[in-house]
Amino acid sequence: MSIDRSAPLCRIIVRGTCGAGKTVFSRALSELLCIECTELDALHHLPDWRERPTEELMHMLNEVIVAEKWIIDGNYSAVMDEHVRKADAIVWLDYSFVTVLFRLVCRTIRRSITKEELWHGNRETFRKSFFSRDSIFVWMVTTHGRRKRQCREMQAELAGTGIEFLRFSRPRQAEDWLAQLK
Image (cartoon, rainbow, N blue to C red; front, side):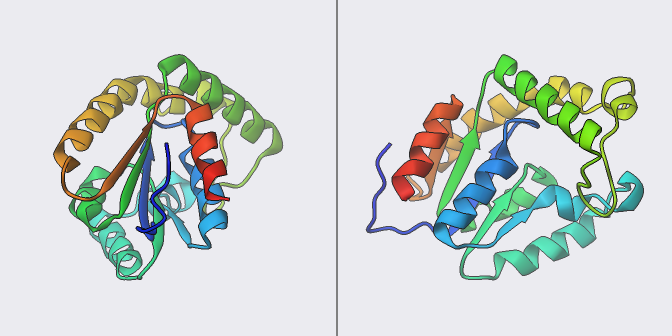
């Protein structure tokens, strides 16, 4: 994919299935473009994995969206859908089930072993990640097909709007695109 330098990307939304690598991609993009990145999971999750009320999350997101430049990473349709048309580009990491599952397993094991803090003191554990109804794997399995469908729907919806829609079906495509920005 080539980059049209006449139309700089200043407002970007990065979406994809849980475990696809949205945050890693968004951070790399943020560094390359020198644009602050907002991770919706960090806004959504309160201490002890409590969820921030939707109205409060919407207010926080509205404060981000008023900026001239932003990168937002996440899928929260309840708060994101109304902001899609404010973006210059939507980047969708639309990877296969196997790719996402492999990445999620590796990430979850690493985080569980290192006890890496995610947001507000929250940490992934083996028990919660692998042996719980709230398992991140249950979430990924139940949302993967829905995210693929949402990707196709949004791509069709945005056709002809001037909003660039970048769908990457393999990690190498996303890496190559980022390399073009250097």
